[in-house]
Picture 1 (cartoon, rainbow, N blue to C red):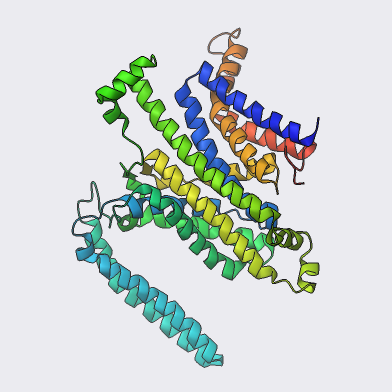
Picture 2 (cartoon, rainbow, N blue to C red; picture 1 turned 90 degrees about the vertical axis):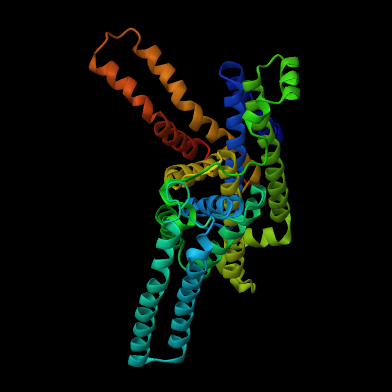
Amino acid sequence: MTRSLTNIALFAGVACLILLTGFTSSWNSALLIINMGLISAIMAIGVNLQWGFAGLFNIGIMGFVALGGLAAVLVSEPPTEGAWGAGGFQVIGALLLGFATVALTVFVRAKTSGRLQTIATLVILIGGFFLYRAVFDPAVEAIEAINPALQGNLGGLNLPIVLAWPVGGLLAAGAAWIIGKTALGLRSDYLAIATLGISEIVIAALKNEDWLARGVKNVIGLDRPLPNEIDLQQDPAFIEQAAGLGLDPVTASTLYVKLGYSLMFTAVLVLIFVAAQLALNSPWGRMVRAIRDNEVAARAMGKDVTARHLQIFILGSAICGVAGAMMVTLDGQLTPGTYQPLRFTFLIWVMVIVGGSGNNYGAVLGGFLIWFLWVQVEPYGAALMGFVTAPMPDAWWLKDHLIESVAYMRLFTMGLILLLMLRFFPRGLIPER
């Protein structure tokens, strides 16, 4: 079988698995897998750009995804009444004051030396910190005191949430620029530590800065680009169309909305995939891969390795930010407590490794396949354990132990897949050409 036929067979196999879910479980479940598979494939393409094209080891994916989710709140939420007057402008002033403190410190250190440099740095940083807190803290308290049960934050711009998708990419790109300017000159292991650390800082800020996005109180009821299911269920024309298809209004409305998301997400995936393919096959893409394979030779040929690394690090992070905004759009809420490295970093890396590092087709395949397994392994594992333990007597310790172990089937399966892939298909299911 040729490589092309093998690739087609792999995609067809994943499609059959999803169709099987629709026939055996429900089409709502199948469409949910498709929607999250589309988002996961977009994240995998972003990571594949960084690792597969340039060899950049980014394990801070969770932070960039979270910034995309924050963008959904800042763009689509209506502004909280009275929040800006109570302390919003004061918060902006405090943040500008903090930025000015850092900039002044950098300037003074560049113009001085010796003991004077040390003293001036300490005076500016300590004084700036206390001045910043004196302006920032009262403003935050005033904002968080406004209807804290339901709001307690600044709110957003009250714009369509679809606009948050590119804004999420811009926020993630800005964070990637800051990280890249400071860490891309380091060795790959130090880059990994830097990205992980800043990712944790972003999540900590989302959880604790209630004035920004309500922290762990969560933001629910976000704007939706598609009609609400309840509104569809009360629409006589929609009810009539659903009856013509042999569906009840509840099932028809949920399928309609999920299918609408699928079409929107597919359009974004196709756009990003085509752009990534064009970049891969362009002179720029060939140069980036040449840098990945031999940095010393690339530098000898006059290539600016750090600048190219910064470019692709920003691009990959921006794609993850777009995916993060799309995911919050699908969920209709921002829940910072769910941003766990296991899901948003480890799982995306598994998708890239299994699909095939350096190949965008592999990233898409890995996104769908691994997400399907992540969702379906636990119910399949429960059915398997029920079958295995059926002949065993009740209250036997082994039966209880096997049934309780179903909760760990996901982790066991992901680890087993990684071991098998690294042993038998180290370059992935669709390896780099």
